[in-house]
Image (tube, rainbow over the protein chains, first blue to last red):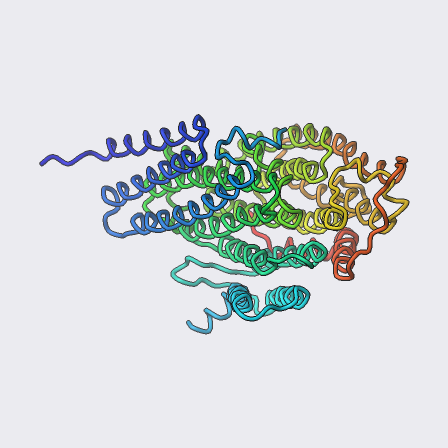
Length: 104
Length: 469
């Protein structure tokens, strides 16, 4: 069976990263923004795993980095959701357009 | 080996012990806020003292954790800063229900900064960075019922998550092009090929977010305005200082082969940062928002200094951060006392402040003079050394530009001094009873501003421990 070349995997991960970035810039719902950030972090994970497997299979630096990214993303999501819940209590909405008391 | 662990990690271990002690106090019976805060201040003071003993350079965990005299000095600076903040927020926290939670967040963030500063590996660096930013987002939301506070926390967590994912993409490409995460091996692999340059740009953008250099500064003012004053001062001084120390360490040690590339990047960012920070600071009325833009402008001056990539550049950064801790925290100390006792945070509220609170006005005046760079105060020498370091490369255009911008900055700093001393006000802020411990913190700040300006031994010591390119 033919092996998938590294460039194609990198294409997927880069596309995923910029889809996440697009979502972050255009979406208005805070939960969706969190999902977009998660998408960006996961594209980085794909990068690390692909580089590790294709270019440097002797040591496991990239795989371990991936594990830590997943852990930290979970921690970040926990804090962010707590903040969003508190925002909902004070604003009655989780739309970023409603949280615009401070500008310029 | 095991002795090394306790010597090199002594400050981190002491901080961890303090954090766990606080957890156990939280679980146990209720104690008065005063006793808890005194305990924390004592612990921080002890940790500061630990920094002054056994300056041994060394590595731990296969080079993941490095320490030397410079790094210990940087940690001491941050520790001193958080001690001053803790003393200043006494009036605010005295009757607060969640004192312990507040300190848990702040100390955890400080621990993360310690690990970030002494990291010798990209993984350790990333862990330290996240450990220092995630608790801060929770701390920004500490005024749970205020609308502005939750908005600020939302903006902080989203922008910091976004910036760290950009930084991570940069790290992944660096890993892909070199196959290692260790700084010392990585620097040998950097040769400036397009992939590495792209990775460096992404990596640097992540940093620029954290130090709020200009194209990435938009979150700063909102977060600073919405957060409680103690968190704002922590964000503007301590967290910025820690990231800048790490940035200099990385630029000078890891990215040395592409020094010409990042020199240009730093100069352009510095010019934009100084100009935008100054222009926006002119039109602010909220004191915290004003200090946010003034801190953006100060970061621009710092970037001029570190673009020199010499020993003088690194030394002037350290010296400037030392002064910046004293002068910015003195300003924040006055604002936090006034805000905790009266709830007023606008510059127009400070009209006629001198008539009712002469001592506080003088503290604020000295702090603002130091931030602006008026000669007898230390701020002048800090900026002078930054400019001198930047001039060493022979690029006088940016130095002249920065000096002209210092003139603009005089306008907005002195506007507050004018409001306090000269403007009439029907109902000025009444005379405030300041807690003794906050007075002590202000005294330390003012003494620091004056002494570090006069005593040349401080700069000489910092210069002797700094690293160059």
